[in-house]
Length: 154
Image (cartoon, rainbow, N blue to C red; front, side, top):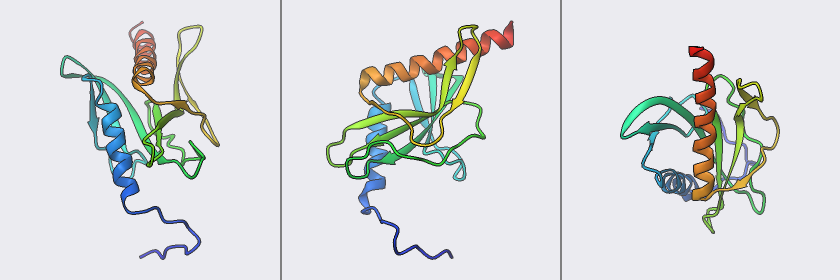
């Protein structure tokens, strides 16, 4: 069994629980999103499936959860690069419940209509997480899948 590094700061027991609770509250504001548990070794906390009237349509994005540390919002997180879908980070201040999001593996549609996943290394930028931002996240993922489908079908 690995030993814990005594210099590593241990989060209070409730931080992980509250991170998951806040993520569920935010992600379930839309009835077209279903939260799935990923494999334990994936580096993801959730796989979010976009659905159309209650049925899966094959569109997913990964979510990693990160607590704020002091006044620092999003921070470096381990990269997950062995997936073929976008990954979003959700970061929360456990005390205020304020959230932010960023893209370590960002879905981008080029001017030519190509669907790309751009890996961001180092600290990931952040935007405030609210209902409007959640709508933008889903729209961005849907645009990426639309472009991908055009290339595959075309």
